[in-house]
Image (cartoon, rainbow, N blue to C red; front, side, top):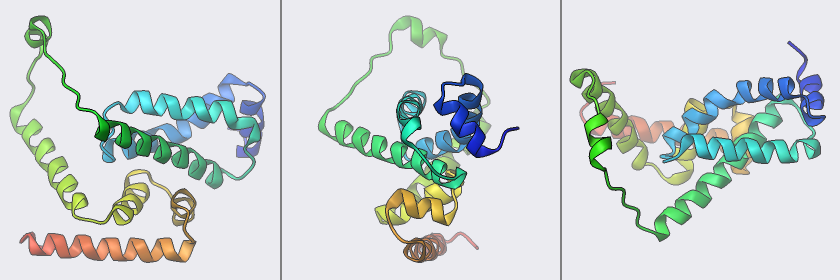
Length: 182
């Protein structure tokens, strides 16, 4: 595999293989981040992120860590835009007969456990202030370093570490107050 700087230069020059390698490096944690932030159209938003990355790749200069932070900053801004749009309109979706007939069930127990776990995590995260939730989701789900998270949220490394520490303490309190043993 090429060095990051070589991959970046090749992708900026239009090398599809190099761009695919950059995409493969960032896409899985990006999708997890978008899912954790409640994105309704993960593939669509991720595609838009990478379209913007591809368009601006020639103007980017930096390390692999800075690249990841840049990609997540673009995603974070798109998510903010999506949340603003969503808050302004009500959307409904009807299920036609053909779609309803094609819906198949899976293992009810597994689905209930998965949904219950995800809802529980979402409910714990919902109790946190926005910046705490954002830092934890970027660190844990997005798999970013403290420095990358600091870049994405526009704070210093020290401030980001302090936010993470306060967020984790808040999660411990929430879990403890809910009666779940730590």
